[in-house]
Amino acid sequence: MKRFVFGAVSAVIVSASCAMAQDYPTKEIQGIIQWGASGSTDTVMRSVTPHAEEALGGTIVMQNMTGGVGAIALNHVAGQKADGYTLLMGAENPLLYKVMGLGDKDYTDFIPVNILARGTPILVANPEAPFDDYAGMMEYIDANPGELRLGATGPGGLPSVVTGMIGSVEGEMDVISVPYDGDGPALTALQGGAIDVMPAVLGAAIEGIRAGKMKPLAIFDVEANPKLPDVPPVTDFNEGYNTYLPWGPFFGVFVAKGTPDDVVAKLSAAYAEGAKNPDFVELMDNRGFSMMGISGAEAEDFLAKWQQGTTWLLQDAGLTKASPEEFGIARPDAD
Image (tube, rainbow, N blue to C red; front, side, top):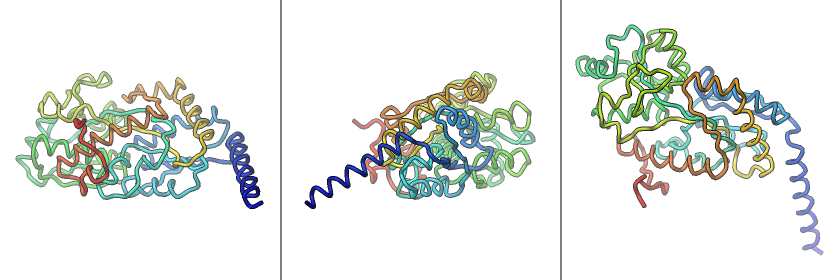
């Protein structure tokens, strides 16, 4: 009798779960954006989500939850019920948390709903900075130690990775690191003269460049970008960057592991459809983002390879608090 009752209760629970998945969504969905307003992650998510809402037939209320290089948002979503009603709208940073000592969770604790796009890093300067390209900046740093104010977003943020590359290729730099809560506030500070240089994603900086509010020093890629063809790739200044490039950030929507498969499928289909919207595609193209639109096993493979390459880049630059090996992350060239 006990076995029968248990089996009956289990069947009821499974049936209820399936019904919930079929009816999903029945209430508002919370979209937790890992970075601050006006930054690149915020721009991507607020641009695509209205189109995804139409495809889903539900409402997604977006909220910026900053702090801890995105770890506060990630931990918040991880602590909610895995039912598809709390989404993490994030960038690449969680894949670095373990080696940077920022937390014990990363995207292996989540399901990628959709990796929407990737970006290209760029180094930009205040228009009044006394140099006009990467080589000029390096000469200025050598001649004026401890004077250049370099924007940052915390360990594991895009600026820390780019700065790590520079340190690995050029050697130690004597600069002042000024932290901000995301690339949006940092780029605003750059335009106002509070900092001199900022590593950022092209998509967040390109409008400011076009408006003359900041000047590009170099694209962190192995070739020029068609959106800014006159800006040289950093490999033109130092071929040592070929070891690390191409590299770039990415933007995606995630749910906690344990979310029902049917719910994940509905969300993935909605964001896949939203990402095809002509307005969103045009925005991403104008800002120099590369569309990806991947989910499932393809997205998980991409995340694993990105984590592998970047954690070892930071390890070799001496910027990690723990070796990737401690978390089973092999070097990229390992068999």
